[in-house]
Length: 102
Image 1: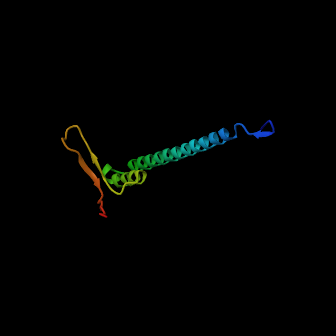
Image 2: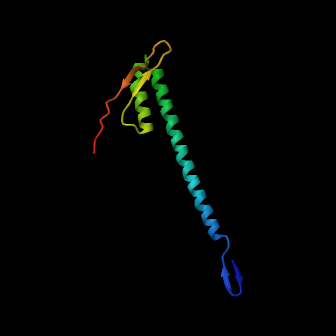
Image 3: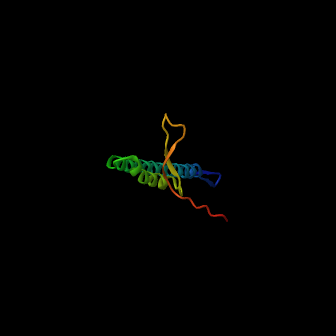
């Protein structure tokens, strides 16, 4: 704090509080990003475990789909396989999606 001609002035406190808020926002964003990455890695590990424990991919597809759906927040979708020798992809797993009109 500085005193000039009987008046008190506070320097830097506004800048410091603004920097503090910016730092808090950056830390909050970094924490959210880290949580999202952790959720993605967990989903990948669950999917990998299911594949290793299953006898074929079609058996594992519903579990893999559920992990991806939860991560993305999707309400439905499908998994398809694309091979070099087939012109079209083959749907392996599909869910019904109900669209609600408003």
